[in-house]
Picture 1 (tube, rainbow, N blue to C red):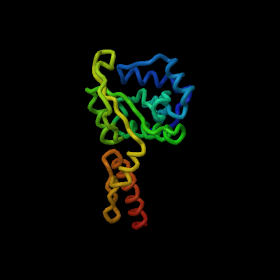
Picture 2 (picture 1 turned 180 degrees about the horizontal axis):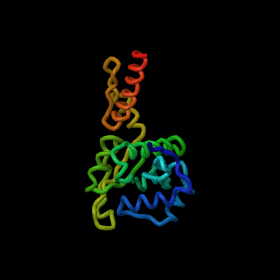
Picture 3 (picture 1 turned 90 degrees about the horizontal axis):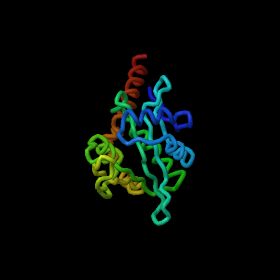
Picture 4 (picture 1 turned 135 degrees about the horizontal axis):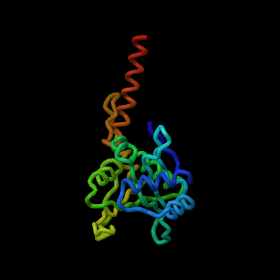
Length: 198
């Protein structure tokens, strides 16, 4: 079982270790401290049953008065052993919620390698980010990055307008949410079966 919780200063070394295992873009420890001291509500970790950090999101608020308040995802990583479980989605959603509710962010931005198909799918299909721009040679190795954004108000309106189509008692949802709903439905079905047979 994995617990999603707000990061503390005690987590920073494990967050950095996870970053080193998962990503080619690495940061000095002072950068993690800077994020934690400035925007503690935006740093979240996924902790395994043995207190090991298996994923994290490192995020911040942009400090540009010329544009509406917005957040930025600096880094997101989940160990290979814990992927395909919805951990990255949970970390992102939690950080985004805090951006909007605590800091009044209107949208969140991030950069992703053009070659990172798995991350691109997560951002576009599950989290509903859109490509804002392409930044040529953004990464140290010269690879281009998609500059992506998720506008919170637009995301909310889309959800209200039709992402949840009700058919009788069944709720149809997008792929990113469906897995969690299946678990709830399986548990509910199991409880009903026990109640009927008991």
